[in-house]
Image (tube, rainbow, N blue to C red; front, side, top):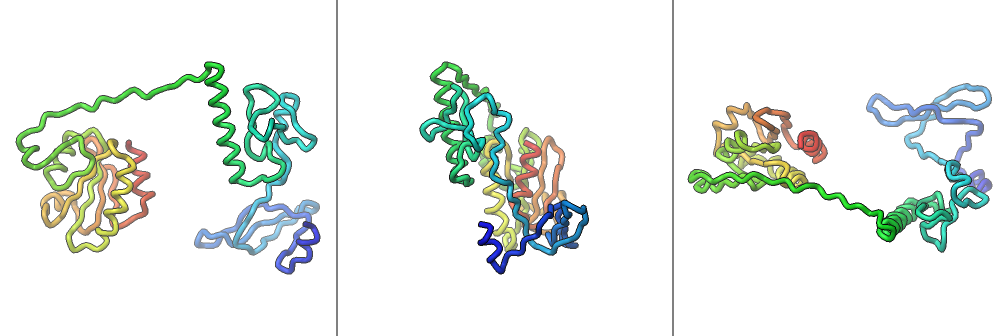
Length: 260
């Protein structure tokens, strides 16, 4: 490895250096690293656009010394390639017990093996206790003749029109997401499937209402909607957030997660 690095014209080795900080430009992008010499303590900036940390090859098994069997290099010794250690009920996974491959994907598979082994151990020794979330009874509400006429069902997640919005605003305990659209709005056609996917992630925890501002102009005027697409979030008759335009799913998801 030593000779391969020094014979590679694309690699420059900086001896007796440690990275102190990462430097960014006025756009918030990485532009360099601040280096410090380990012998003199002098600092300088090296212009680079990427950073990869080498964390070494020594397993962090110090806390296990004298408790489970370790090999000469400090790796936990496991039995027959599985996660079992020298102590019953103690299982090892990942690079801590893998002196050969040390890859993320093998560590993930090792972690899965250890989790299954733990489950089997707990079941075998009658130590597994299952906890179940209590079922939440959703209060049912009698439909009015007007509800039936308008096709409104509060138990559903997705709705459309001002009648549904008014009913949900006054009666729903859930977070309400309102999407204002118009028939000729191109960005609306972009946003709707994006927002729908987010809403589907929180089924039964949110109500979604689509309002066509041309079909229900009084609702959009009362909400102060000047353009589409436009999203508003309400809960307990209080407006929580306005999000105009088309945004990434993450922004809508964060609002929902913070209020459900």
